[in-house]
Length: 215
Image 1 (tube, rainbow, N blue to C red):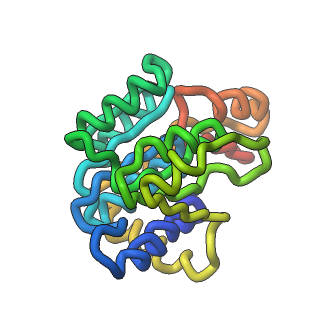
Image 2 (cartoon, rainbow, N blue to C red):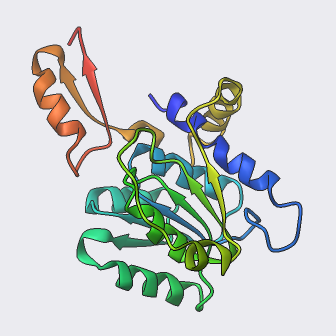
């Protein structure tokens, strides 16, 4: 269930390759914000912790997912449904002593999250855009404020790469005792309840939903 999703986190390996010069993310002890902690965001969160992230901040609309994110290593959780954009930005600044996040990983999958993600970055920070796999429309940004004034960098992740499957599987095996990987499957349904399964899959209180044809 998780192998394909975990391979998408190859974006963090690319981010480390961009760290050849001082003050460039992704480095050990960096502050990382994960916007959207569904299964993809959770895998990025775990990978960031494995690769040495310092403070990790999870942002989502679901209390269920935010609590699960804490179990996976998130130090702070921000409920996007109970806060405004301005309040979330202020929280990020407070948690980073006014500096901003070293890296923001956008996994919410909505274009509106991108300007917010850019606003969260520090000077020279990195946005890893992994959520917008399909065309959900356009969004406006301010090139000066969002990009040039802070020398921001953006790394787009288009999906999994075949070469990442082996390393991803080995990582999961190595860390299976450190993270509740089996609990990523939150619900199981027989084939006759497929409609219920589909509705549960998009609910706020679920992660991965499995249909068991022979149950």
